[in-house]
Length: 216
Image (tube, rainbow, N blue to C red; front, side, top):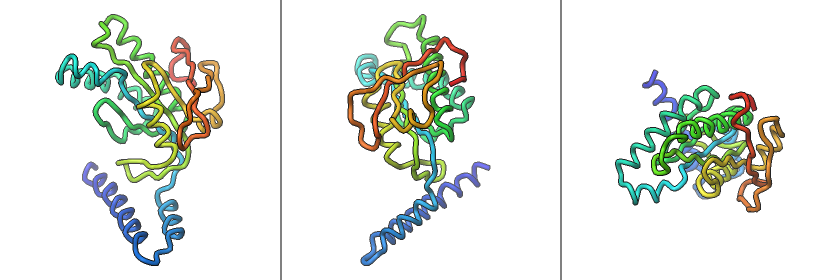
């Protein structure tokens, strides 16, 4: 199975590379090639970017071993939650994770449960050892290249929200997420006064971690 998976991902990447090379050729019909790329790889997904608040500062203050320990603990806590909510972890980079979900409501439910788990874990720890999670979520049509990466306006917007704008324990979502799933007993939205390229709007998800887990 791992061998077959590697072939599948590689084939997707090679197919895209060939089309991009064709697109650069003189006289190429870029619109037609773009349509082929979207037909091959275009799919609707909810996309989540996570980050850890204050991470660079803690690395500078406490060293690389502390850095590795915090990453290990965050993955140990959060990866089972992602799996339980049918998320697909595409990649990790340092203290960040990129996860996709078929349904945006599952992404929201996963993010709330992830924050709940972090609060439980942090309850008896000093600030320097806490896992302080920041989350950004987008939803829409994007290019999915095998199980290696996704590209699109909502990917960029979710990355900006999760890695640059969100604070500890915050879940930020694009206007496209809000429009798709609406409100719930577990959460409501508060408009964020920022302009995020690729998103119609941005919101802070005001959520209740005391409600029944897994139900958005």
